[in-house]
Length: 184
Ligand code: K1U
Ligand code: ZN
Image 1 (tube, rainbow, N blue to C red):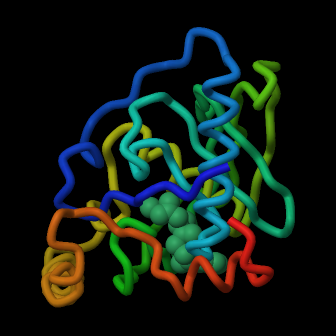
Image 2: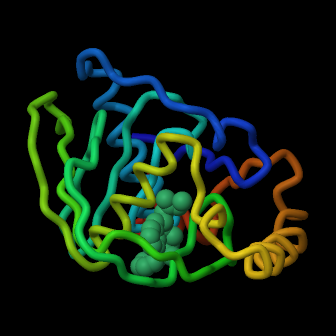
């Protein structure tokens, strides 16, 4: 497995629409495995293909030790609304409150190409909506009020200097914590 570079705000791929996966192949499974490894190393609870420079309609999430690969996900039902804080591995150190559906039902294909449905509440519901948004070129900052968005972008202007080429390479420290035995 490999750790992948993460595209950060400013990289045009984050605003692109993804392409549905016609059939889940070994190449997609390799991408899914690498995305899980990258998400864990970056201490995230989700990661979508455009964040690692790919346009397949694939995301991974892991909330409460329940790893889920979602291929071609669709939200079938939304119920209620709730506000909660979000971050994004592509906009490090920037956070904001976003109103989302409280409960969603999502249909997707799994790593083996089998269709499944999941009902989600709380953080899993939020994370699924955040990842599915990534697959359609949408970011959590798009939901912020003009003032809050301006302040989030001002914070990002300071942070982005460390990512000159709009790519976040995991640091040696992040890799070492992820892999304490030192084997790569
Ligand atoms: O897609 C991503 O950028 C991953 C993102 C997912 C997410 C976080 C919070 C709410 C909705 C979706 C992250 O994992 S950012 C890391 C983070 O903020 C976080 C990590 C653990 C628990 C809660 C938040
Ligand atoms: Zn994100």
